[in-house]
Length: 434
Image 1 (cartoon, helix red, strand yellow):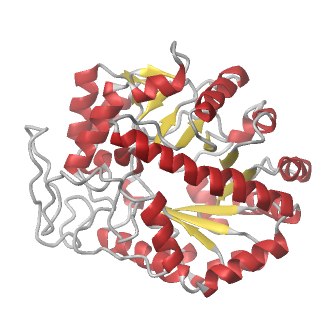
Image 2: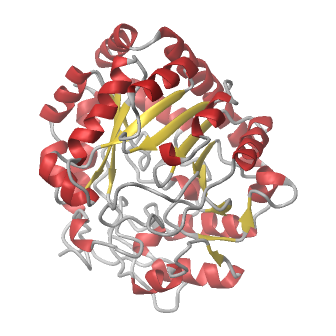
């Protein structure tokens, strides 16, 4: 509790008061109400996610290892009109929070205009930070309803290697410093992998970010998917547990917010797509289960709008149900065969420009994700515990799932069969990484 008080005091000292008020109201109060509305709908069997993630453009100035986005393809982006209609539709059904992804969102010509058009919403923009000049940061502060989440994948040498360009770390840090100088609520995201886990999953890195003025961090783990999958970067099961333990411990120790999206209050793994709390919209407007499942049957520009398309989608419904029955982790990593069968069953479209998503899926080898039975690490900070229990639990999605606490799921050639244990020790028996 004392760490959260220190974090709040630090935010009051370092962030613009208007930005804080927008965060507290648009994200905090209205976001909680959106989750409550989601719960009521879910009880009726109707699903529309309270947290909608939108990739507004496919283009990017970097070439990151393992990226699944069509960054080298001709530019595609959601036009301003389509974006505004999507957000307005979601607002009318109780939503107020949107994650904005790319590519690089700041390459979208109408990003700032879109943010300004919805002062009653809150936006988290996932960015490499290199387009956030001082003038852009000043505009973000004026708007007040946006938090940049700046991706840092390592220090100088590792950043250049991971992101396929030179001087990446310094250019990104300039964007981060511009945001902090303008007193914007600012976060730092890291895709934890083999090359940066020892460098950035540390107390010293958190202390450095606190000294710089960052307000929160998000440690998510690298997922080997896409056309240039790099399996060598993936964490071992023991390292996945290490990440979880670090996050939980630092929440009680360091005055900086720490986000995670794959565990509930008791430390049980979950998938936001499986619970229905989040789905993804591509730069073409295609409605996908999540960013790394690049298949869809519906588009936000279909007649009836996004709310109706998502609520009535048999494809999304079957994905939620099947993935929850198969695993508490990532169904794409653990059971790519199930994903393939479901895509074929519904005749879902490949939503990529490259049109190789099925071939990529077929080439995947099953591996462990965040679901490691017996290795749960419950939240230690009571505020995080309560917030997760109320607004980021599994919402009953897994109550009928046939889990076996002795081990992990086994890849079954017949697919769609009941889940069977793979091994007695999930930490020592990864079929890919050990």
